[in-house]
Each structure stands twice: as C-alpha cells, then as structure tokens.
Length: 366
Ligand code: NAP
Ligand code: ZN
Ligand code: ZN
Image (cartoon, rainbow, N blue to C red; front, side):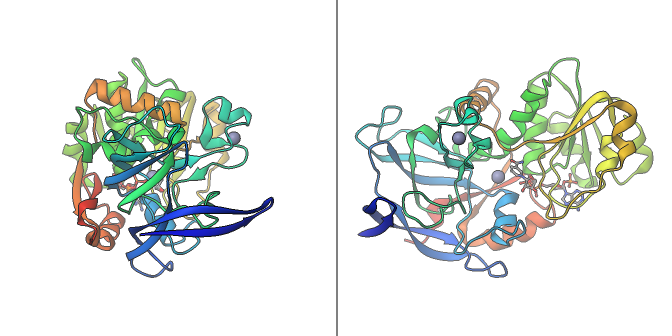
C-alpha cells in the first residue's frame, strides 16, 4: 500500500512517499491502546527500513500514552526499544544491508550540528532531539510514531548494530533501559572500589544492577518489594535493602559513592541523598509525574550533588551494546503479544514484571 503526501514547507511543497504500516497506539490519555494504521516514509537515500521483530515496554511509554508529562499529541504510538531486521535501504546507506539485524532506541534524529551533537551527546541537542515517538516528524509533518508497529524507517546515523550472539528479544530493552543506566554509570565513573546504590528494581533498575556489577562496583539494591530481594541477589547485587524498613535504610548512610534512582513514582528522595558520602552524587533517571521535594540539609552537610541523566548518545549506545555483547548481558524479560499491552501497562504500575515486557511483533494482526 503506497500513497503520496504533499506537505507544504517554507521553500514550497515537497512530496514524501509513504507506506502504510500496522501499529498499536492510543487516541487519548484515558483510552486503551488499539490497532491503527500509520504512515511511514519510504526510505530516502540515508534511510534504513526495519521490520520490527521485538519492542520493549518502557515505563516512559505509559507516562506518554497517558499524558503524564503533559506533552502528548494523539494518536500516540509508543515504543523505543526496537530490534528487527533490515528489509530495505536507501542508495547511500553504508552501515547496513538487507537482512542485517538492527536496533533503534529513543532518538531517530537531532540537528547534528550543535556542540552537543558534535560531541556525541545528541540526546541533549540544542534544537531538541527527535524522539522515536511523540516528536515533530521533520519528514511527514506529523508526530513520530514508535516501535509498537510492524516497521520503522530511520536514518542510518541513528540505527544501531546488535551483537548477533545475544538473545534478540532480550536485547530490545538495552535500547532504553540499558543505555539510560549505562550512561550515568560511566559518567560518574562507577567501577572497582565504588559503592553504588540502585533504587527501584524495575526495567531500568535491573539493567543498572547488571551493568554496575559488570563494571566492577559493589552494588546495593533499594527496593520496596520484598518479593524482589532474592532476585536482586541473583541479578548480581551484593546487598539488598528493603526501603520501607527504616532500620535497614540506616545501614549505608553516608557510605555510597553514587546512587542511581530509577523509580517511576513519587518517593522520598532525601532518604537516598542521605546515603551518599562526601562528594557523592545521586542521579535521577526515573521521571515521576510530580516534583520531588529536596531538603537543603540532605545536600549541604556532605557537599552532595543531585543530578539527572537522559538516555545516552548514539556512539555511547553502540558502546553499551558492544559492552553487553562482551559481557553477555541482556534483560530479564516476559514476552507478550501486542494485544496484551493494556494489561501489561496495569501490571507495570503494580511493579508486577520481572523485569521487562517485550512485545513479539509477529502478533500484530495482518
Ligand atoms: P518500571 O519497570 O515500572 O520500574 C519502576 C520501579 O520503581 C518499580 O519496579 C519499583 O521498584 C519502583 N517503584 C514504583 N512505584 C514506586 C513507588 N510508589 N515508590 C517507590 N518505588 C516505586 O519502570 P522503568 O521502565 O524502569 O522506568 C523507570 C522510570 O525511569 C520511569 O519514570 C521512566 O519514565 C523513566 N525513564 C527515564 C529515562 C531517562 O532518560 N532518564 C529513560 C527511560 C525511562 P521496586 O519494586 O524495586 O521498589
Ligand atoms: Zn524508555
Ligand atoms: Zn544538535
């Protein structure tokens, strides 16, 4: 099925050839996701067309589908943990050929010219990166549509190579949960001799444990779920603290070099800042809907830093995938059909997933 869309731009009108694709998305914040048809552009010179085989389910998908960050434009097709097979390439594509495995994470483009883009920090592009979903689509004039779909077309500069020996479905979550934890762990120089706290054992948190451990750090997991204590140890944690228990929370007070907070909902950030030693940093990657109050005296007495971190650049994402290939690291996953996505969102809200849902895209109705 092929159509042509005429889109007016400043210089006149351009013709973008498009192709219809099946997808799952939502039309409003309070509606379920359902099957719909979207347009994908036909590959231009630098584009790679990917048949999506698996897509991970990130909590950001849920925040966005339900407009919890207040910027969602509908229809919204989430999904930014994409792995699949290349089915066609544009004339100038060099990195990929038909039949290759390929992956796409949270971004599909950026200005490529600002200082940050040149440094490989495309996620912090001065013009704003083009997110894989819910960003203005410079090609079609609509919004970008994500990986809950049978296909996607992306410029090769934003397409990643997948280590072929890893389980493909379990590799998908590396594209967001993996890089979002890898990047701050590297930035804050986590490694041997460092004590690291990981807060929230969800999709991001469980990757944080595996990666920090592979980097050589001592890892302490903070969880609200008693049912995850044994798992945390299996995943590599040296110790586990039940964060609802005030006595257990005292154990590492003032002792940790770095804390990675991957909690998706409101919680007391001060309890975790107090775990840091002098000059320690807490990086927030979790993005709850509402602000988290910070007490001055959680920071001042030990010159502590409170910061944030967003995904990672393209080169760093490839570095992370190669690191995972070398250390045989993938996500712990539960495979679902696309028709189970609404139920999966409800389970995600209850913390009832060990530790990432991954959609088998073969389930999308032909
Ligand atoms: P997830 O799988 O749902 O995990 C979140 C975890 O947070 C839960 O498993 C739970 O861990 C803990 N938690 C949930 N509700 C809580 C509450 N009320 N109080 C305390 N702890 C609670 O989510 P995810 O996909 O890992 O994403 C986590 C957050 O990171 C989301 O807000 C997401 O949007 C954000 N995110 C940010 C970036 C970035 O670039 N910064 C990238 C991706 C995702 P326990 O059961 O162990 O307590
Ligand atoms: Zn994500
Ligand atoms: Zn830029």
